[in-house]
Length: 154
Image 1 (cartoon, helix red, strand yellow):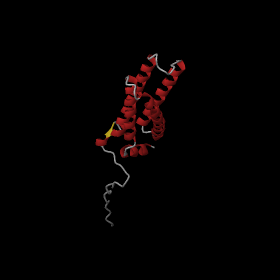
Image 2: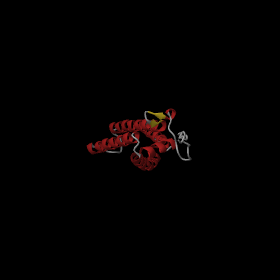
Image 3: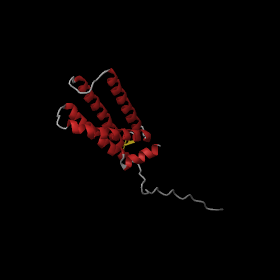
Image 4: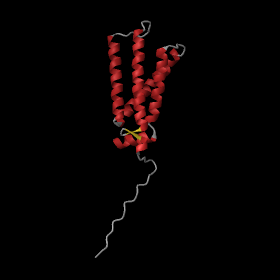
């Protein structure tokens, strides 16, 4: 009669490029970096909406705000919220699309900042704050921990 004993499972080794999630680095099923980035992106959309509302109320604004312009802003904000919610669910495609849109917006920001740098009023300050929040959120979304989570969710 053979004496068969089960050998214990070897403990998993962390290989280079791999990441293990623990309760310390997770928040509501997401990495803490992703959770923080989502909050920052939601704040950036909210501040952008406030900025847009202020500019609509400013009748001296060089941009004409007709009904069509307002509808376009509503659609843009709805799409931004949609992509943020999908990022929150771990959809890598949404993170990629949001990053591309962020890059396009950053180019626009570079052109706008040369025109508004001497105008220190609330919409300009909000514009700068929004860009800062978005830059920080993008950095968080591409941290090692975040990348591993998005890869796991795909």
